[in-house]
Amino acid sequence: MRDQKNSVKKTIMSKRAEYGLTRDVPCSEQENKTYSEMLKNGETLPEGVFPYSYTDGTKSDSAFYVLGDEPTDAEISEFLKYKELELLSTIKNCVVFFTVMAIIGIIAGIIIGLGIH
Image 1 (cartoon, rainbow, N blue to C red):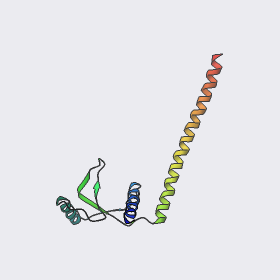
Image 2: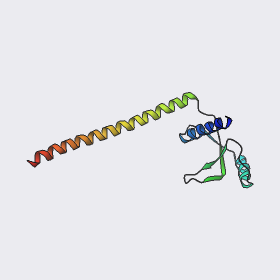
Image 3: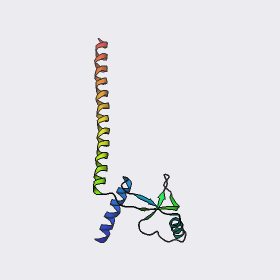
Image 4: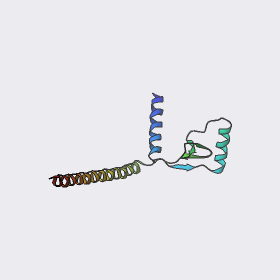
């Protein structure tokens, strides 16, 4: 049961990170040196400390961050509302595009139909 809770918590944390709902707090130079030495010695990082990831997928061995305060439920709700508005705008733009394309197709069909006779 405990493993399931940890698995759920990890999944939630990874989704929050994926959607930008976490706050990363950079470690100090001294902490970075300490964590870098730990990695060189084959030790694991303390819980809640993560290496920065680069866009190519590699991870830094000299720069680390910890997760700061988690966003409140109100902040998450506000974020989700903005995301919903963004997605609705995208759907609206797609509907407009395909409607215009259908109208152009109908008009072209009528013109071609009249031109054949």
